[in-house]
Image (cartoon, rainbow, N blue to C red; front, side):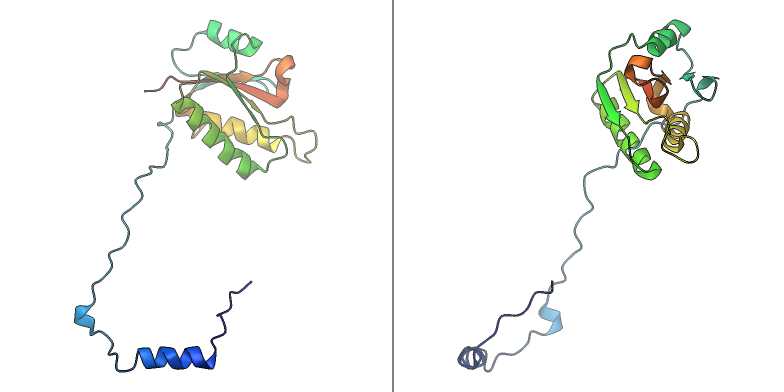
Length: 173
């Protein structure tokens, strides 16, 4: 709704005009320019540079690990033996919104020093074309967000199976 100017009575208008009678506008040389506001001191969080992850598995169950991650750590992650410190549920999200939330979630928990998180993305049972959100999460984890990832694996059946992914985050640098 557009704001409306208050109605000014004829008496108030006459009083105002009498009060400003004889006033002269300032010359431009007397006016001070107002500088633009300084840039915001808040920095946008950027993930670390990408890391090449070794990916194994088929289209349903998968694992990936960064150089230096042992197969023992990976098997513990895959079996769900590591305590998950936070969970992100992306059910019902669009791919773009899900990617944005995944990025924010991983950056925040990496900054907090969390080690293991769970992302629930669904199996794609209600999608016409496979599991687009699951595929987007997988693509981001091996792509732009790989600098945050130490390893990741399809979750154990008790935590969602193919519809969820465990992510082992790198320690803060």
